[in-house]
Length: 139
Image (cartoon, rainbow, N blue to C red; front, side, top):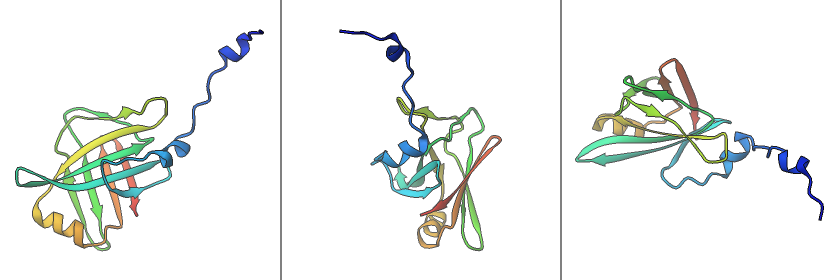
C-alpha cells in the first residue's frame, strides 16, 4: 500500500460563496431580497404587543459593530422608511467550512410602518453599517 504525502498536504479547495449560498436551505425566515453574494430573510413579528422586524443576512457580508448598531431602509417607488436596529452590537458568524456568514439583526418599528411595508411595493432595501452599505433588490 503506497502512501503519498503530496495528497495529504494538498489543501482542500473551498467552494466559492456563489456556489454555497444557493444550496443553503434556511427555514428561519422568508426570503425577501437577494444579490449574487447575499440573501436577506425578513419577517415581521410581535413581542409583548410591539412589532419588530427580524432579518438575517446570509452571504459574503461580514461585520462586527459595537455600540452604534445599524439602520435598514425600505425604498419604495416614491418614498422610503428608515428603521434603527434594536441592538447596538452586531456580529456576523461564519458558517462552518465555508466563506459564508450569517448575520441576524432585529429592527424596531411601529404599526404604520408595518402596514406600509406589507401593503406597498418595496423596490430595494439598504442596510447602513458603520462605514459599510449593503443594497439588495427585493424578490
